[in-house]
Length: 323
Length: 316
Image 1 (tube, chains in turn red, purple):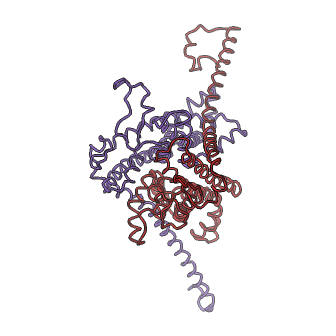
Image 2: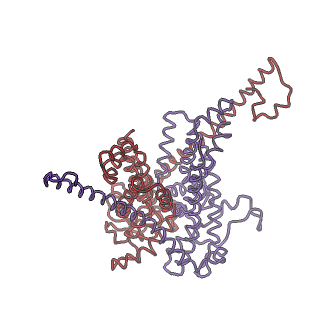
């Protein structure tokens, strides 16, 4: 490469042009220098890419380390089978089932809202709506997932709960129902957006085949497009589930933080996430058993979401239809 | 069908049946459209209700003093000065770490990485990280930044935590932006003798900039509203002072002292006010939430606009 074409070496232009052996030596030196530079840059970029791996390792390491201390005090069997959760009392009991019941109930309420509505919206946007409707409504919908969750918590506690209390007399001020409903609306865009992408990726020829057989839009959507996009839709559901399980602030604000083993959405409850917030808000000394409890709870939460993530990954692999 | 008179009533019946069936099917189409629009409206109306409710409840509190006062025990005098300053400083730290690392990581994965098991691990890892609940990042930060590294419950800890949190978002967006640049741009540059880094820095990053920016903005909008991880690292909720300004005060604060200062951010201030029983504080919460929502919606809107413009303008 002639030096004049190399913008990195403007200074080289002023030197007298070398010829013969000297010129070759200069080019060789340049090449070595450039290669060294390229390799340094590649190493730096690789290091940046590895930050994510270190993050995962860090999460696993911290959670395991603190949980290990925790499980030396609390037997694993008690942790999984006890039906009381009172880690901050003098008579401390550690039954994660109590928190799991809160997490599962609130997620169930949220998904009962998000999955049907999200799926219908996805089918509507992908198969029914015109180009213009889609282009305007989809961004509006995506704003739903952009609103900070603390604001949904405020909304659930001070707007939705009073309305629900008028409909259901005797509903306590903190309850899973209102938190779950609001959480569901928040999750709609996660479900609908991914599902719609999956449906739009179904090739036109399948739809045309269906229409040619005289099927209506609805029939085409339900019998042709949805089955063809099933793996994408399923992984959208899985994403929705793992969002619901990991959601924190809505529940911490609107569902109360009272741990009880119950699957009744009309009652207040603590979830794994809201328990961590509750402990973090207090002033627990570093190294106390209460401090370690949140890491054990966090480990449980991570395992839960990991299971769902792996499930989603497996579904995408297993049921992917290639066109 | 009128075209076949006297052909007997059976075919006519069949035709009528068929028509009825077609009509029923078409009705179902229309019905589904209505259901679809109603479902969409649930989302849109929630957004609207949220917005209007906060605006109406919070409007009386949205005075200039609200932005220039510290939190107070008396609801009427409380403001969000320490909260918005804290939010901006934390965002600055977050961007400072997340943008270079995220973009560099994405460049590596998209342009440099060979297809091998190690690259696969990084990729699976990134998609898994995107699904990790934010509060788990808070636990990581509590164990690592606050206690192991000894950063304490500071702006630096919070900024780093949020940077890790939005890293997958930045990486994914950057990779998508790079992937959408056609191969012939790279080939043309290589053909002129450019090295790999020259191709990346002179061509790919500038062309991918709108896409990268979109990802960064969406990530920052996510980070500014994130509450759980910051509560987990133990941020105080009652902060009636600002972080030290560099080179001022007595004795003069160091250039980086503000990084280690205690802080509060908008979402935590809202959480604090919402969880108080006194309705007067709920008004404050509504006003602060309105400000926060405006900030995030503006950022999201900007990102959507950028993406829209990008899709329209770019024709390779």
